[in-house]
Image 1 (cartoon, rainbow, N blue to C red):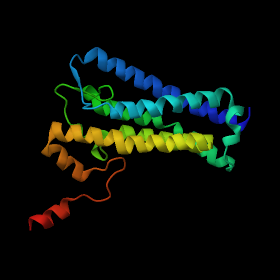
Image 2: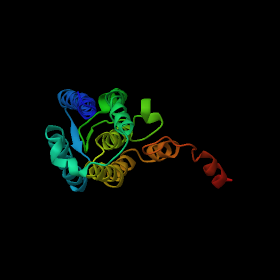
Image 3: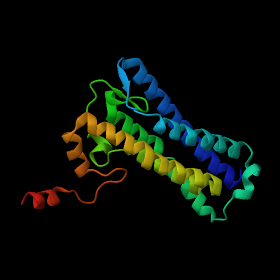
Image 4: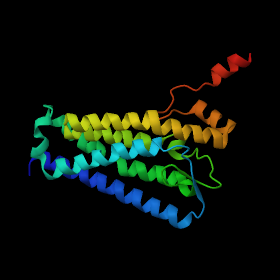
Length: 209
């Protein structure tokens, strides 16, 4: 078995595990959560997400089934770079499971919220506000390194930009409206996709003085 084939096995095992987890928790949310409502004031986040996701995963399938079609777009990198990318993908299902379990009954479908939703600050949410998007971004970067294909890399970074510049601002706006001061205080001590190295408590105390 060639190294390239081994890398794709790593990738598809991880992608398959992620899909199974997403499917299960979405099914669980639909089954046990009777009342949900949309958090989307406009269709831009939904359109942006689908406009990126459909061609990206189609491209992934095409590349896996027939690698020769996009061989011309391969980037010459050391083999260990691709191997590291493939290995880095493997833990992502476990991180997703951690996030889903931390959400508990607050888990809902994308761009929807459970009535009576509570602000989750346990687990990874203790450090960052959007751990699921952090895992997804890490997942995409790892895929970019593993495939070493400049077309896939382009989609990887466009996906991360879509998350950071379109999806997250939309969700932050909803959460600010939903939880008000509580969420503003929560934002001061947490990062968006990475933990904050410092909090704003000192600056707040200076302002008060």
